[in-house]
Image 1 (tube, rainbow, N blue to C red):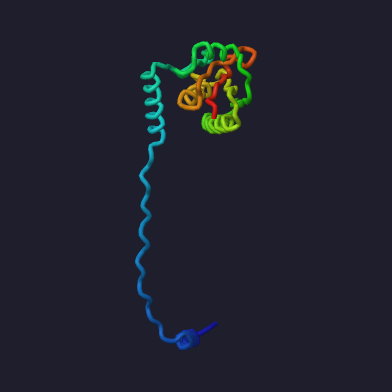
Image 2 (image 1 turned 30 degrees about the horizontal axis):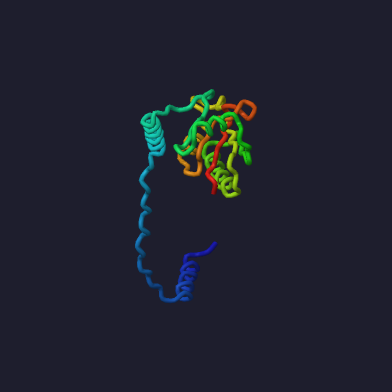
Length: 178
């Protein structure tokens, strides 16, 4: 067992070995991280859905149902041309199948497909979107395809495909020559 004198000798030796000690200046505490404001994502999504629904009502279009056909033509396209498209009288030069894609994937795939089809010189393409029988409520992909095609300047006309080519689960699209 060590005595008190031995531990005092150790402490004295230690102080002698390390030399003069000075206190370090205190450092300021790091600034507190500013917490970002919470983002009400669901509220924003609900607002966007309401605005989209309101816009559809203003345009006189309600969401398409599973059995509804798609049909659209620009003023420069004659009704006869649209009827010929509806009968499948134009040769389909390229096609894409959007089945099993979610809305975001389908939108990206569709936009890329249309750009590439036009770049390759395709005049008529087929887009298989499905009838939306497995969607809750309205057919998601069918309404997405309808909305995107109506907004694009390179789309001259589109119509649901004849039964043999997919019926109301696919659409034939006439593209502007590019």
